[in-house]
Amino acid sequence: MPGQGQKQSGLQRIAAGLKAWRFGSVLGVFLLVTGVLAWRLVDLHVIDQEFLREQGDVRTIRVETIDAHRGMLTDRHGESLAVSTPVQTVWANPSEMDPEDPRLTNAARLLGFNEATLRERLRQYAAREFIFLRRKIQPSLAREVLALDIPGIYSRREYRRYYPAGEVTAHVVGFTDIDEAGQEGIELSYNEWLSGETGSKRVLKDNRGRVIKDLTLIRDASPGRNLALSIDLRLQYLAYRELKAVVSAHNARGGTLVMLDVDTGEVLAMVNQGSYNPNDRRQLSSDRLRNKAITDLFEPGSTMKPVAMAAALESGKFRLESTIDTAPGYRRFGRFTIRDTRNHGVLTMTDIIAKSSNVGMSDIANELGGDLIRDLYYRVGLGQATGIGFPGEAVGVLPSPPRWRPVEEATLSYGYGLSVNALQLAQAYMVIANGGIRYPVSLLRQDAPPAGERVLSEKVSYQVREMLREVVENGTGKRARPGFYSAGGKTGTVHLVGRSGYQDSEYKAIFAGMAPIDNPRIVTVVAVDAPQSGEYYGGEVAAPVFARVMSDALRLLNVKPELELGKVSSGPATTGERG
Image (cartoon, rainbow, N blue to C red; front, side, top):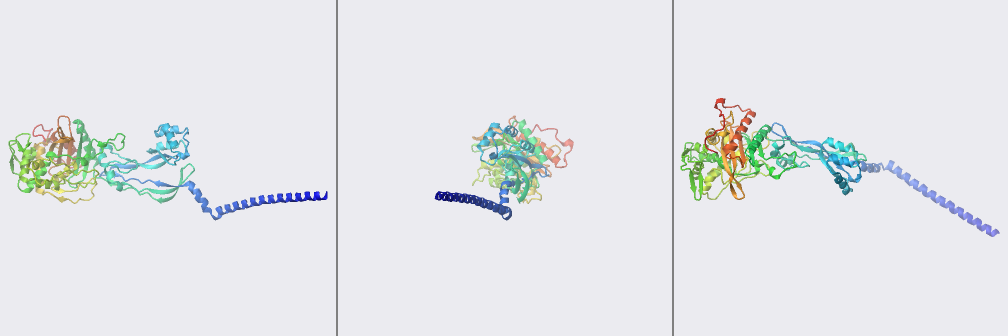
């Protein structure tokens, strides 16, 4: 049928047209997408190349911190006291790691970890990109860990503080924390000076996070500045050895020794017992951290008699030839009684110091008045900060009542009722030793002569030095004779103070002195806490330490011996008063 054939022919034409249209549409879309992609490729690679570069850099370029090298601490001769050495820190990117990696067994062993703890830590911080595994270890150990080739474990360079002299200089130098921030001692008080300023740089890394190349220095690290201390490491070792020996020999609770240069106020040695090793602080206790020479206070006892005597001579009320009748060997002040070891009778000014007469000093003080004695105590540095700039420095107590009672004047003259630290006591004796000049004490090496202040006349200081010579030659300090050198000094023995007041059976043995006595070079103070050997007087416990330390110290400082062999005592004195 013609009509039916025409209808089928029309349907076929329509179908063919739809098919051609679909093909054209698909081809058009394909060509369009191809064109867009081609344009984008041209755009990125020709027109906008920076985009791809930036995207690549984001994945491979990182900014890293450049650690600053902390300044070095040295003694006065350049010997190292604290140095920063390069070490490695091992860290991990947990997001890149498999906590089940079998190689973690060896990594845990090398790093000193419990394997289960390490794997659990990686699971716990799986979303993080940075955690420390082990900080500041030997580079050789870090290389062993990296050689395991565990994805996500890396290392970086840091610095670790090392103290070559260990416990010998611990209380002066102090220490830093793991980030090299000062925590004690000079490391703390001069932290800003010693600390450097960190820098930064851009680096190129591979897909394992390893640095391939340094690209750009953003800011260079600025190293910390070095610092030269006044300490002479030779004298420091010597002082530490002798102090440790006497504390051990007398089963004492502790001790302190301070040595000053007479003409500059520089601290040549400062040691304490007990001490600690700043290189190994695993068993460190807080009571060992204090630099007791600066932070701990005590009543100086009879070591203050020479200073009180200087006030008496300076006043003009007493002369070197003046005498005091100390009979019957004691004085009563109401319910208080002040005693000597025996009835010395009539004593000269020199005898009062040499025999350490409390009664003689009390009579002088009552005649002189408390204000004059206190004034000189203050002028030589008591009752005020030394200005040394050391953390935790104790100022001490120097009483100043509106009206002095006779018993207060008496006790002030022989060192009770006030408190000092060992450094302050050494500074006071430095004034006597150098002719009456008070220099600021310093733990830093002085490259120029310091500006001093005259606080005592040269004549009076000489007279007191001659009294101190007599103490060592014929008085309570005979055991303080330093071999082939002359010396002068004063013994002191004071009750220690506890929670309930003075302890009847515990004492502090003290000796403060100078040598050579005709032209003093150094002043040394020795204090030993609570000796338990049966001997506890300053002349028995502290004076022999002074003798040994000063003899060797003067030799190391090339001071010419003064005394001939035949004039040197063959052994410690067994007679005379106890100090």
